[in-house]
Amino acid sequence: MKNLFIYLDSCNTCQRIKGELELTDDIALQNTKEEPATIEQVEFLKEQAGSYEALFNRRAQLYRGRGLHEKDLTEDDYKNLLLDHYTFLKRPILIYNNQAYIGNSKKVVAAAKEAIS
Image 1 (spheres, rainbow, N blue to C red):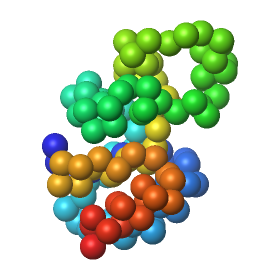
Image 2: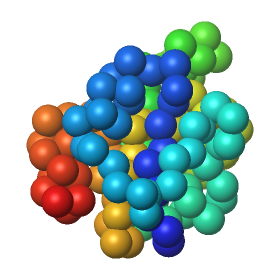
Image 3: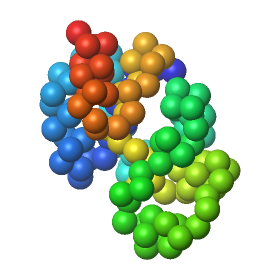
């Protein structure tokens, strides 16, 4: 998997972390709204995270909007939702040297910074 930063351009947190990471020229940018994650990317990220549920953004407005918070979702459900709409993918995601750094926790951002430097 190529070095890649997956983010949402309209997300302030993604923009802040993008600036913090000081991304190098060998890291491609992918605005997930304009270029949603591919099935290959989602499957790679699942391998890295351990499950599709771990990639799922429960803060997405559509999560409640579609009544998903009231359902028992399976791994297949999570996979299909991740592929169905960009907003369900936890972000930002840095893929660097075949290692994925998923989400915006301080620990993840610190690990991503260390990997790049």
